[in-house]
Picture (cartoon, helix red, strand yellow):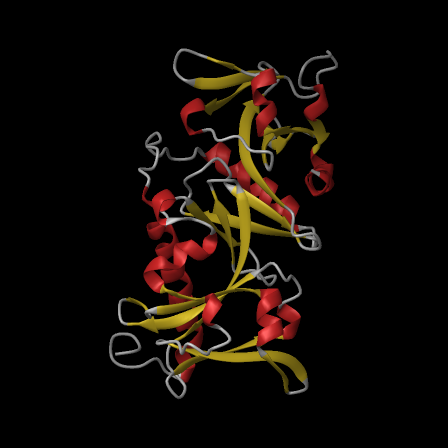
Length: 323
């Protein structure tokens, strides 16, 4: 039976059923890929419902989810505002919400192909694209190349069954973030949220080096961020920045942002660091406990290896925008 407990979804429950579809989709991608697809969810709605990080090659795949809780004449019928499909590389993913899961057939199609094949029309004077597909696709359907059995959906995200079945690396046990670390992450998020040119995403679940992802609205370029926060004061003006080596995955698109919390006056130092993850090896060493670490003295006039990565905190938005 289509719908949730107690019968089919009603019109008033459309928003809830859409959220159910999305979270079942994120879980299915994570499960089928054995963690090789890592989902990041947006902190604000700017046209992309998720970024899917393909860990095999580091690619970030923007995704727009369109779930339905009922069939129209035996088919999933979807309508998409034309204004929401400005990026042809966004993957449009659609399917049916059924009791306990998703329907047997899923649509996974790049937005550029979707616009070419869908019916262009209007609703209340606004341009839209409309299409439909069945759970048992016809051989003559123009959508057939983009329809896939739900249990093989991972293939449309660039993973073969062999890659998905590989035993994932077992990382260190999860650790609770400190209050100071959370404060730093919140500060970086707040500053980046000031820019309308950037779209921010959080991981679902949090299982890799990048814990905040920034997508440039115009270019579609993606930067992953790991935020580190240290505490300093007048007695201890420098601090040690550490990262667990076993959980570190470097990438050309992943950066470390380091902030310093001034305990004496309860504010962040005016200086921060923005370090490409692939450059960590040039400034940090590894101790006997498996930690990569380096010393940072914010505001120091002494020349050193951190100089190329120093930035003003007030310019963090612009600096990451240019990264």
